[in-house]
Image (cartoon, rainbow, N blue to C red):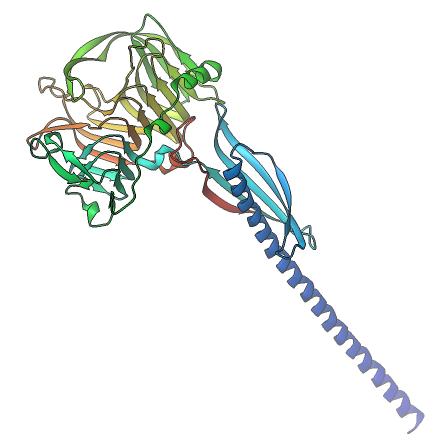
Length: 459
């Protein structure tokens, strides 16, 4: 082989060697890069799992230490005890009048191998409020055939359900004595906990003992301490008391303020209910004096009225209004829903009465009520009015969006021998899911444990 051929061969060997080395290097580099990416993907997935573990730990901590909202960092280890990474917990609480309404928990996690690859989970927890019920009643009750109810319906007493429902109807009674006031034969008939002509039975929505272990709801546990509410209103909210007034008339304004009127005199209306029989109801405002327009403090949207109360208007914000007479031990104050109550945007209203919450005679023909209505000692309803109060004794439709919580039997329609005689001819009820997890200030909880409301990964 001559020198030229030897040089050519050497050159080719060097070129192919270089190409081979480049290819091998590229393959090795690609493999290394792919391995690194796989490790990063594994670390990213592991970081998400560690972040989720942080949320689970936060839930455990809340169950054992419900008042501890301090931030915390913890090391995450595998079952063999090897430390894999870290999660940081941040608690952000929504507080009204010193009471925790809901919690936002943020869990930020990473692995030790890739500390810059972080996964963040944010969840919302809150205690479920009594607004999870469309109706919660501590008595026997009859829901008429005109009723359309969306949401849970529970009574500690027996239930005659002739209306249409789309959720559970539960009674704490396995049987009860149904009297003529519930459409049964006199003196009474023994009926199961829930019975009637409503369609929920075929759908499996009716539940009562002994087939189902339905517990009685403790109304003492969901009754508010009115003295504490009064103190909070005096310190941080709005408090009204006028010894010369019969009560107050409050109109909610869509700008978030309230107009307050002193009710000086009232007219008596002839009325009937089961507790009092025929009586004079001093529910119609005859003379009132303007007190002023007030803004409600942002940190404590609580209004406390010492005396009877008439309310109506458009609510802007999450507000609780309470009526109680804690000065006169012989007086239990009532609340009259004087007109429509509507919302602006994502608002909510809690209405708490020491005694009754009543829809008066002079109410709209088509009435709209939004809110949580809690009658602690009395009942929610509308009295029976004689037909000479025409046309006011006969109203067309009551639309309710929210919850009715009543110590006594509820009712906004009166019948005699199966015929309508007074009240609202048609009634629709829909519970407000928003108020179940984000209620107005100091709304009683139906369960002391925090429940999951919302989960999201923060990018």
